[in-house]
Image (cartoon, rainbow, N blue to C red; front, side, top):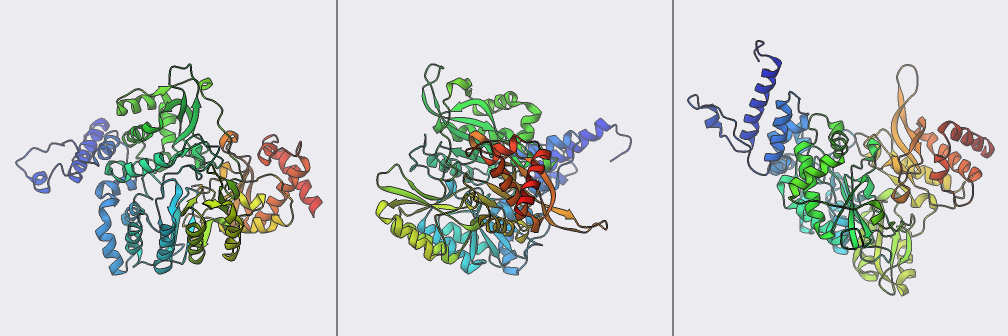
Length: 597
């Protein structure tokens, strides 16, 4: 670019050229027309379903800002358009390179090198509910095309791992044959839609979230313009039941609430809208004062996502989430923009119009619990950090078919529940689980134990999280008699897939310095005092650089300090740690460790 242009002129020209490129990518200018010397070059408005994203990219460039590489990849070829090449790669036995690693994620296929020379496939399961035959079908895919097991994720979803280079498309097409999909399960897309796990069967719930999660799921799948966002986007529906959906950790959370009469709106059950949750960036979703009729939730979510498409940051991946747009604009400006997209005003009510929400039960995702339906129960199955063999999956599917209502419900706590179990069959279900090497019973420690894939299967993982979580459970269960629920979240890196900041105890993987030469070993930074639901909070750091093998002993000492020094038997671990400054808490832990030694 000529040096005789002013900075403003350079920015204009960069934006002008970027606009031409965006128009060409969306079909606005053909190659021959663009190269015709006799025709003036005019940057036409981008058209088609990708136009809004392309306009946003061009606007950032016109402002003199540089797009991140992922934005350039999406403009060159959106991942949804790469399927034929992906299949050819499989036939050739070639893993993706460069931008194709990112593009394949649009189909839910993740190349996890260098940790494993294989793919991981992540599904989309709205509200986390599958039929028994779908669950068994996923087991078949895992056996014939992958590593012979699956993981339940913290978005009430399934992952299939260790997929060979030749088998990726076979898994994706096998899922479609089961009435499932992995489309948009990765990259810059709206992720799996979560809802209350016991929706429709929970005596406490205010509303059944299943139809609303399913409607949003199909809305996403049917509209290409909702793909290729500035970055990933999470939406959750919580019906007020006994098992929390962790909606406050999502970009948009719809919370079922009861609205009283006398505030200018029809009394009854509405969804309250909370925005901007992203616990890895130390923020929980905040109340907007907006309520929506349940049947309008999809339209409202659509409008808000489109505002994010237009204005979310495409130049800095660390700030390309809704939280940062809200921080920059404020809630009122964002809501006004959403109203413009929606073509209608959002309904606002004061806080006093909304009744207190029912509190979740931190142990309701495991064990046997009465359903709304007379004589029926749900049985929460304990799964060691979410992992199941294909034999266990087939056994669980058979139990659901023969002794339940035929459904399996995944939870954000990395386990599943079997619903519709008759009173007379509860003992039989528990015996069948035992035959599979599983159980519905869990200690207070294991019931709230959550771990992401970690270094064993993720290139970002700094430590083997699932192994650490298991080591913590085995070490502490025989040494500490914990009498209240405890949530221990073990995540492998700053992406916080296991949401360490909302755990009573949260461990985030780190490379711990070993010596002055710069050598490191696997380890963790430890935070305490996090929470969710009515006790929602972001944890505070207690320790840095704890070696992986030291983690179980540190957790044991912390539990002992809590049990020895709590104000009364009802004081939870989170409340105990919150009323002590970190230095004082470390002293109490050190004392507990000395006594136990």
